[in-house]
Image 1 (cartoon, rainbow, N blue to C red):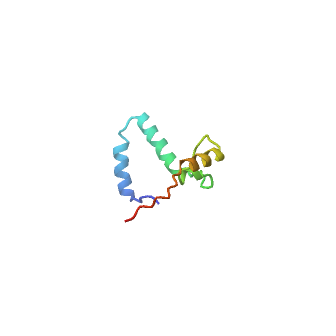
Image 2: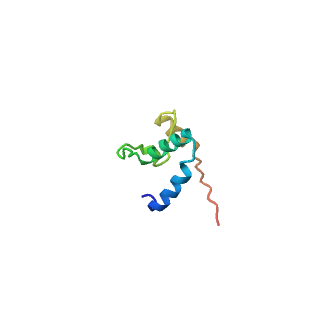
Image 3: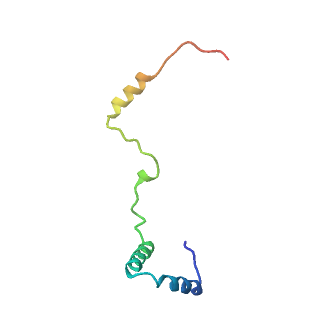
Length: 79
């Protein structure tokens, strides 16, 4: 949802913007056009929703390293 403004305000902006050089006007037109173009909402990447695990190792290697890093201690500390 965007900001709706009156024709009076639009006319004030136009009076200011019409003083710009043609190159700047073209850039502004391109940016405004891009801002109103609809995007395909069906195309999205799930990786953008959360951090994905990226690793070159295979799952067996990762599991082995996790198990080797564990510390098993029978000594329990009292509080």
